[in-house]
Length: 178
Image 1 (spheres, rainbow, N blue to C red):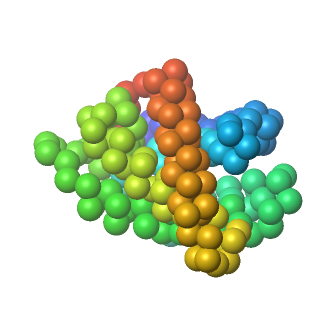
Image 2 (image 1 turned 135 degrees about the vertical axis):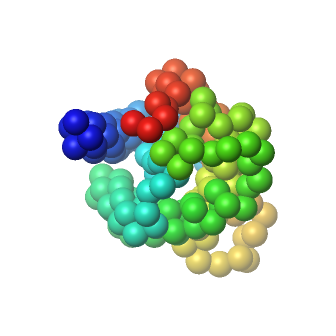
């Protein structure tokens, strides 16, 4: 019975991977606000993996998803590197944000399982890390630090807003103990 449940979880994550790639490529890559703000929704794939996901799996999945997005957008290496960095620091960020209460390691870090305040810190910190990494690699200089910060903050704001909408529309609370 447990193996059947685990297979369902793997299938769910595979479908989630495909869903976020398609939504990013077909919808969000064609949405721009103010000429420079382009929300990234595919981060939710890594952000929503269970707390007990090993770091090596996070990094591997982050790189793979970033590489797939790069293949469709023509920015080879940029999404892969930024998502790899975000995936690498994810567990450290989770430990850094104080959570008052008992946290079940089988739960997902989603808005329904965590308090909104904790969840907002979680997605804002990791989205900032992703966006700063992505745009710093894009510019390869701090000479235009003002523009870099404006783009990073604008993209982070709209990405977090879009991710919250997706969370409230498509996610439901995790079941403890699978």
